[in-house]
Length: 143
Image 1 (cartoon, helix red, strand yellow):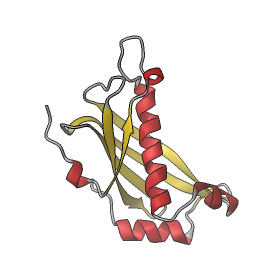
Image 2 (spheres, helix red, strand yellow):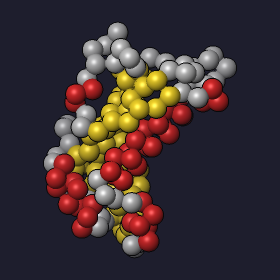
Image 3 (spheres, helix red, strand yellow):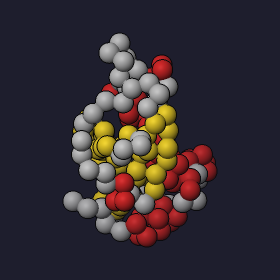
């Protein structure tokens, strides 16, 4: 079992595996972890005051450009877990979310991920001032 690194993430949400998220082997399907990670990113941004629908109405769409996911240990139906998230700047108009999923109660790391994206305004990579401010506050992402 790996050592819990939950303290490395300033934001986390708690979830539970639902039966229909599991495959024939009785473990969470790999694609479902991407949903967990996306939900956590949206909640992080919402709690920081950014609303996806409002950003879209302003002409800015936040898009994912790259995802790296390391699957370390499976989750099963009924398992409780937390998704930890940390935002960082990855360049002038690029954001990076480092994320990790921890099984509860022991805190075992089951997934580690790095998601990179940008904003698109008028078909070009750009960010609104409020997104820029959030990234400025977050600082540079760890390498």
